[in-house]
Image 1 (cartoon, chains in turn green, cyan):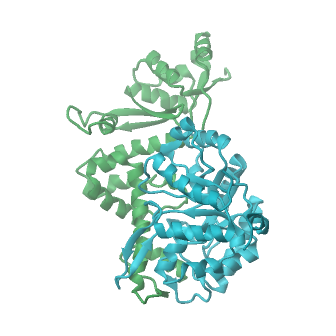
Image 2: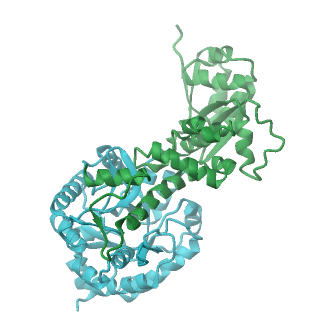
Image 3: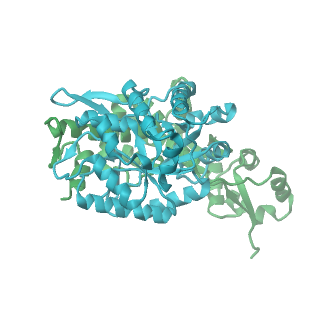
Length: 252
Length: 295
């Protein structure tokens, strides 16, 4: 085993002994010095997760979060030097992490926080001017032929819990009082200018946007969705600069 | 003793970075708006390259605006130049792309490893100072400089332990890497102090063993203090405290030897208010001015 291989393994798996071949000028036990690296690695990765998932951390408390994050770090250490993306699999991990099962909405809150991070760093794209959209919607063939392209930061999340309400409560006083936790919510996440925004959608509106993302023209996307307020949904997308391109689908 | 002009002329090509001989600050995301709003009198800003390897959004927006006003030092923390495996080529390409986009006055990385195979360990890990490591580090630096088409600066490490198989002193190892690869030295004075305390070396002797004419940038930072199992001081380079008096003292010694060089105040943890960092930068600026830097 190469020196770095053994060193790396013992940094991630804290049950392994200090690697061989190390020494210190004063004759101190190398393990007491290796511990600095181990603490740095474990501590920095746990901090990275807690920076990316602040509401998850608030929901379970710092001690629980650190213990949970330490298990995740050991099972799934980063695979890239780009720490902005570390923890992509954290929500899926939380979903199956038995000690967290008493907080059934925790994984969805993690999913929402991850989508917010993704939206924050997503590629830039100019929105279509509002007048241009209004003009396009007014043309007779618009609804049947118009396809929309959304800002790269736009993401949807369907949750069996009131995920947006839970998340929003933790932006202020962190009180869950009055929130119907088990009420299904559909989240829309996007970056408008420099700010990441989160909205709750009607179930039908969420399906509609998904259909548009899949390339369906406006009319088909709306018809293939459960009932929802089309005007309001389009208004939301336009007002928050979510539409970056409009294409006319070739008539068959 | 050399005059300031002699110092500047004796510097190697790689050491002439284009950064001004002034104090600079690490650019923190929490300070973006304040920097743009108040245009502080700062010599340059430094950013960690990996933080800006994202597609778009506020990071690029603010860095673009700040680069219009200030020189930029791009500092990598994830290239793993000391790794025993090959360099991560896609990562090197991302770096080349970032350099093309922002045209930084300086690019620097560490004498350390941080990845093993696919796993990134998010720390700067120590190397055995022997011939195979020397050859590998030089090959990796060649590859970096050839890909980026510019010389880089290599930062001396802060270390907490040593390897039995090391055959060279750290300073001699660094000197040889620089001689062979033609890169410059990013002299982290805090790392010099931390390593010398941890390994019972004399900081001035260590400094004098380094090729100081290749210094293109200096780093100053604070450390945390711990002790090993013998109860001896063990200093940890955590960038989480104000600069220690001993490190300021060593910095003065460096300036006496090489004249004024662009100096970064590093603070990555427990980041204080912007004006606190600004005050430390002003302290460095005064020393730089006394050492012959421009006002």
